Length: 322
Image 1 (cartoon, rainbow, N blue to C red):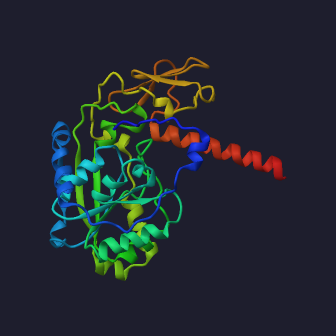
Image 2: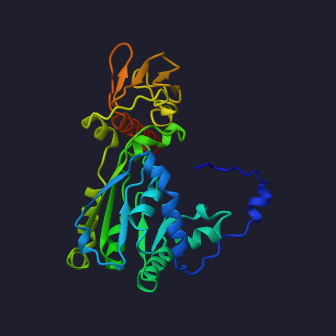
Image 3: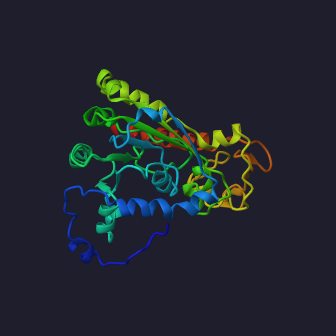
């Protein structure tokens, strides 16, 4: 996937017409078939395999809510492969409609704005399920994983499941993040990708459980650590560019605490302030080239950075208000 940049003046941007909501359109069966076959080559490259768990409980043609962890651009191709036999609508961000509204509508996309309450989206999802008898595909994390771990789910996800009253299917991918982590500049690695497709909640389960209980179940399903999975399964990644742009995640040096001085290139990330160098090993560990390895696990390093920011905010607020 490539991002196109179009330069516009400030006045022209302000004069652009806002998006006008339209009723959800029935997904084109032809485009669903086309997406499936366009995905074949990429899925063959990663030797894609999947396992079904309890999926015999999902009736043919029965609408369902498909939840999937968001790892890389391969996610949509996996959906096209797994659910080609039933109509589905994909919840996606509104900016994906820019310049291709007709196509996005035709393949079954429902637009939404990220990180805000969107009652229009809920209404569109209900319409798709009840009127169009279509399934809903949703990536509830609302973004690709940056450090290989899950992003917190919205608090409203349990209420949404209760409202739709359709079976919930969970799709978990393995290897997709490691094949193409977001920080790595869209460079694909030689990596096998697999998935588990699990019938998670029936309509009866949903009626019996509270929205909070459903949210807790989904939180557990969206608890993962791709780097830990690599380490525990001895997955070797030997590409010489595996640490390229790793500074997008690991921007603070744990040795001298300098920020914005880390530089990821090749298999190393180096602090340009103190000179400390770390290797991203073939099995997903961070290892100092010389001296102590302060933090060996990328998600732990990223978590430490966020805790540093929280402390800085606390200190600033305490100073300004007390």
